[in-house]
Length: 430
Image 1: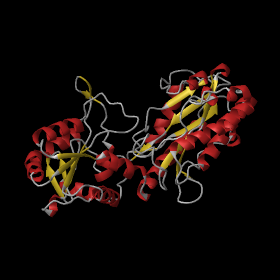
Image 2: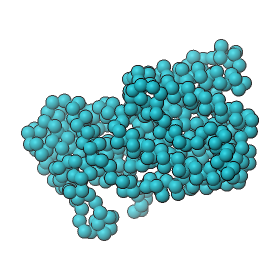
Image 3: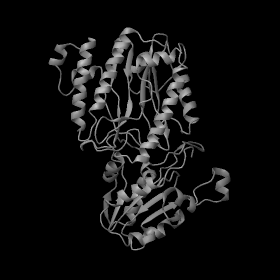
Image 4: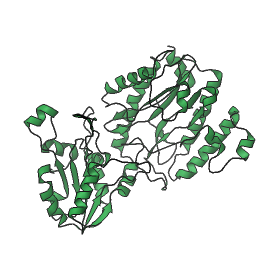
C-alpha cells in the first residue's frame, strides 16, 4: 500500500464497538471485495470492501473476518482468514500478508489460511445461534453485480438454514458515521493532499488547456503524496459543462473567459476527501461571475453553521433552501412571484440549485449514515451549494468537508484550501 501504516488501535476499537451491539451468542462475517475482470486476463485495480477494512485494516483480496464475541474458545472470538502466501505468489503478485503481518495490522491474533475456512466455520456454526450477514443498505446503493459477500451469504444460508439471520448494516451505519480521532487524522491527510493538487492547478490553468490536462495535474500531485488517486471519478467542467451535474468526460478545451468547475478529491488509506472549487480560465472573474460566486459562498458559510449536534437532515435542507432563495432573488434569477407560486415539493430555487447540500463522507465518498437520525459530534459532512445558469454559460459550486463539533461551529478539514475570489485570482496571476 502507498499509505503509511495505520494505528491498529483504530481497528481494535471499531471491532469492540461492533461486537458490543451484537446479539448474545451470535457470529458476524465480513468479506473482501472481488477483483473484477475487464476482459481477457485484465482486471480492475483492487479496492477493498470498506466494512472489512473498517473492522480489521486488512487491505487485501480474498480475506474474511469472523467475529464471535461469545465463542467458548477465546481464540475464536476474532478470526481472520487470509489467502495463503508463498514464494510463487510473492514473485508474481508481490508479498501478501503473513500471519504475523496480519496481527500487526489488525490486532487479531488468530489467523487461518482460507483452506481451513469450511472446517472452522462448521465448528463455529454448531456453537452460535445467530449469524450476521453484511448487506449493502446505503440509501444510494444500486448494485446489479453479485459480490463476493453475496456469494458467501448464499453459501452460508444454504449450508446452515436453521440459524437466525441478523443484519450487520444497521450497526455499521451508526458506527461508521461517527469518526474516531485516528480516522479524522486520515481524512485530514486526504484533504491536505487535495489542497496540494488544487494549488498546483491554480499555477497551471490558462486559456486553451484541456480539461484532461487539469485532471492529469491533480493525479500527478495525488500519486506523489501516497494517494492511490481520486476518491471518486473527477469532474473537470469548463463553461457550460458545469451545468451537467455528473459531467465526467473531461475532454473539452478551456476557453478564455470561461469558468472551470472542479469537483475532485484525493483518497488516502481508503478515506475520501471531496472538494469543489470553481476558477476562471483567464485568472480573473467577471463582475457577474463574482456576484454569483459570492452568493454561493455565502450560502456555504451559513449552511455550515447549521451542522450542529441534533440537527435533522430534512430540516437542514429546508433552511438551506431559504438561504439559496434569498441569494437567487438578489441575483435577479428569481422574483417574488416565482417564490409565491412555487411548488412546495420542488421549490423555485431548485431551478438553479437542484441537488442536496451535504452528505456523509468517510471511507466512502457518500459514506454511511442514517438520515432519519439527528446529527452527532464527529460526523463529517460535505457542504456543497451551487448555482447553475445554462443561459449564461457557467455553473458555480463550492464544497468543503467539515467535522461536526460537540459545541460551536464545525471544523473545516479544507480550511487551508483557497476559496475567496481575491486569493484565487492572486495565486493564478502570480
